[in-house]
Image (tube, rainbow, N blue to C red; front, side, top):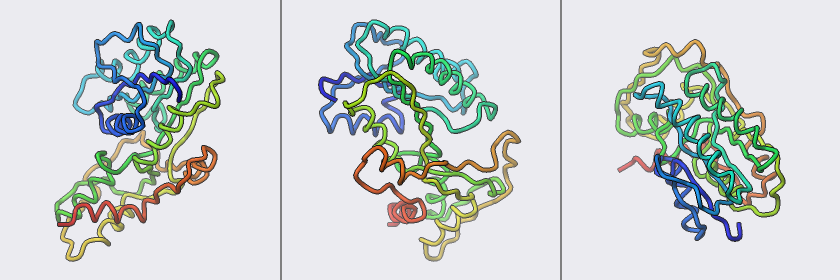
Length: 266
């Protein structure tokens, strides 16, 4: 993006740190906004909202603040900036799943009201895996590599996944793309397009380790009644990459899990 000034939130988080590394490598001018910092006065052309609070070990107020009120205040303060595009990392979970999904959906609805002024790109990734993430995939591979014990649910729920570098490639595409600044709303689901059960993930991980003695305790957790049984992207990631003209193939979990496993071998 020529003469881009990108305002980022969550730049020190797991996903945000990787996005900021890519922006830096491309010599793109960006700034990671810390809480309490004033964003007024900057000539921001793009706002990338990556900050999030999953509600683990924090208060309800903290979840509302990070996922709704914080980005809402930023948009209000950017009203005088030459802003053209807003990129939001949303959730694939239904609103009623938990407080995290509720607050993310609240901001999504609020953000949609700006689609007559900005190009709003709402990205809804499935489970993000790969370093430095700490997803169920990463935890299972780590446990298998280190012959550790891991408590799990019954493992029958079906989930889709996206490798962190593939998600970052999509974010970078929209953060740096210059051909279209028309106001509007793009809501994009991001996943491989293939469902895996937790039990399948365990089997895939164990295949890559000889003399594996890791113990996976299925049924330790009951799971939330509100959790969907199946979540799989309707558009395969290979097709999305073609639509966005990203000139490489996305990662396939069943093959890529071997690379994750190799990274834990001595």
